[in-house]
Image (cartoon, rainbow, N blue to C red; front, side, top):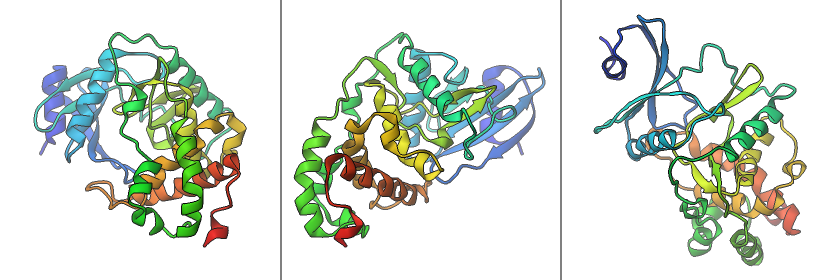
Length: 287
């Protein structure tokens, strides 16, 4: 039986699907993904919203594609709203490479794509980066139990370090006029002919483009990349660590069973980075 996403894509694109396959995610996605080949020789990637809040996220991503286009993102092919919104994009899977591993030149290719995105002309407004609802260390300060339950630091360490982390996070230079992806990591990008293409634009905002580099670094380190200090974005360290500190200890959302473990792993990179930048005591020495 033909999957619902494929049947809907046929209707939207006006051509019959000859083959299709389900795409398995790394465990961080709440959407259903398919690739399909059509009778006219074209191919498409299908993103079908399945679990809240993914329907709104798919609608948000459609709005981003209406707002901007460029070589740093896939081509937009179609959209259908409803209880389970469907987004149809260029199929990047057949001829792209998906890190890790990271090869020579890959990191610079991603940075080049981020520079292209930052200089892109926007046809409509996007929300500001500062309004992304990432309260970070303020959430931890109000209810430290979930963060302390991760076992990374002691209560005494947190009590001493929290004022410094809060102050540094609050002065993070988030404001700007550039397109910001807001969720750069290896499962949200691919490399094709030496160029990087960024995927999953549902969290995109307008702000300081350097945020994208900073937010990417913890996952890049986990995949064998250089230390965050090599990228010149140390002013974001406390904010990035606060994001992962706020989320890593929360229950896993439905449909994304591995996301909290991945966020904890990123926190184990981001928090020591913030400690080095702010000259705070090492976290593991506090336990």
